Figure 1: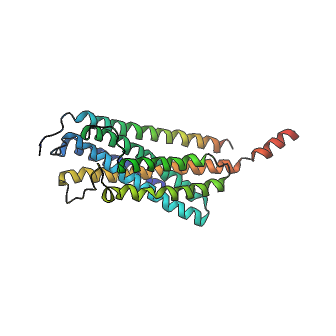
Figure 2: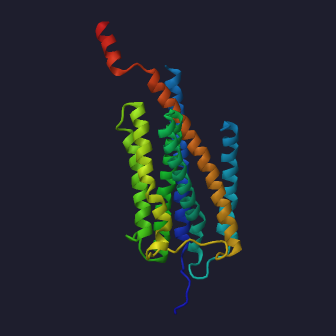
Figure 3: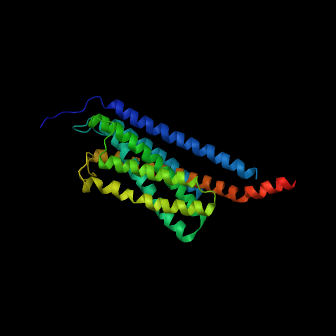
Length: 45
Length: 230
């Protein structure tokens, strides 16, 4: 059975962690924006 | 649940995620065959676990929402489904990157990958369905029923690798994983769970505020009649 190690994996690791962080940050920003929009609607009622 | 407690749990989750990610990237050993690319596991597996926890919670909220008829359960359902869908999308992206490095392909219609994609589409469908219902009660009951139907796929995603042949490996256990890899995995899983609780709680409050504003606003027909009368 051939033995070996996958080389050059760091680029995939950086991409996975980078995309995960970016998506989570963007989602949290969207939550804050929607929160303030909902607050404005209830204040303007 | 106490709002302050949830905020602190979110912050604690961020700290755990930072520590777990640091250990996973720079302290834990590289896997014997996969090398450094296996480090994707420390974010991929927690995303899968927490997405499934979110969907399971949404399933429980759906049953309680139908049973009690109280709208607050519908607000909670939306929070859990939306956060679950975000993590589900991340799960697929991370898995695609890992698959490209280890299998040589970005995607394969393998049973685990396909059921995970179907899971995302079903729960995204729940969120889309809500936009079709104008009536608050109908929106809540449609969402609850659709969530219960969508949840059928969740156990399939979990067990499919045991039931059918799959490219994807079966679930590991602490007995089959190096202890140095278990620590960052658990830290990231607990950290992501705490952050997910905070995000779902925040989303629940937005839904509650939106629903209250909607029920306080005069119905469109009445408002237009008043305008015509004036």
